[in-house]
Length: 479
Image 1 (cartoon, helix red, strand yellow):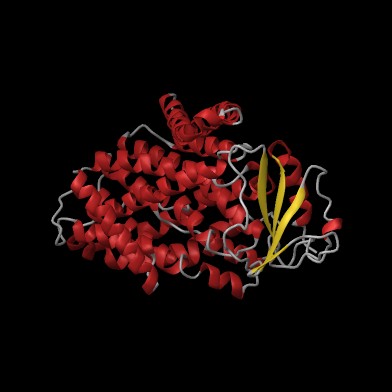
Image 2 (image 1 turned 90 degrees about the vertical axis):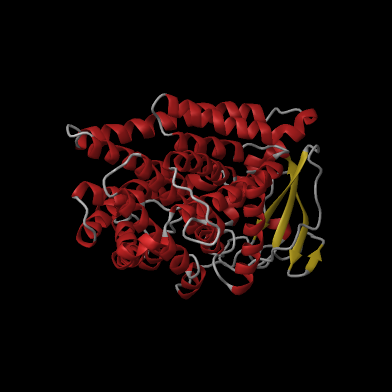
């Protein structure tokens, strides 16, 4: 098993390199690898254990969501929590219903089975969204909304999927039971996430330097404990693990970079596993029967259903038409529908294979159409910030130092652009250590003028990070 697993991972690395060079999305490459390894491909690996696939999917998705929370912070998301919550609730329900209507017309499914398919593909995918946003210059507010939405809407879609499976399996089940299950899952998951998040914040702020190498062990333990505790009492472990990751990511700690790097690798490994697993579970010989309806549903979801759901969820918000259009196009699907499709298979739902095969086309269409054109569309709509150089920081601070080096990227519409260093209003204990402009490093002086595209590196005591974030908020105000 180790030999096979190592060979698959090595093949994934090679395929990812090749896909990047020829411009093919890496997720599609992993999916193709799984299909080649499967029983219908030259690999000949027979894998049809839906229960094992579900277990692996849950573990992988938990790792992805924890990394998503860890890579952000509450201070970054608190200004967008309302629109993100609307997209994650109203938007998900609307998307599930509208997709269900389309699926009922396209596939030989009952109404409940059609809406179940809608719930499976209703949420955006954390791994795909976070990976895409890392390489785009979409305006900060919109990027943060997408980040927050994808962390919150996964638990909503999962709760809907579980409730609809129960509804199909039990004749006496109904809409009140489904509503109660969703509320219970989200409520208990939030309670556990907040409680374990507070505990994790206290622990990670006080980890002694002697246990620094074990910080990733502690973070994995926090993720596993929070997920397990929520799941045992009937709550959403996915919401709990995301909130704990968010709490750890918001905690000033000398180990934050170490943890982010570790969990980023772990999440990418989970993403590879999930897409290879989808490829193994898909039998190309069975796709022909649903290819036509599957492609039509996938295109409808991308170009009509997701945008309509965004407009419904943001009807009372102050978004412009261009911003709504971009948010509608940014509904990337990926690992989450794969995991939820394994829920359907493991529950032995009638026509479960049809639902699973339809998910295959939805994921492919989303990755290819949306993932590769999001940055292009944002530029055409004028919703990007000035591109910022991504070279390494010109200096580093030791993890055991009481000081922290924080980077700030200056965009063209930031209030700080055009200001002199002496006018920046930094806390007394903070200073601009260095400014990078393109390929040049500039020693800052009081009269140095900050320009769009600059990267400012601020040195300050770790306990003053909160005060610096308030200053950053003023710097980001649009002029």
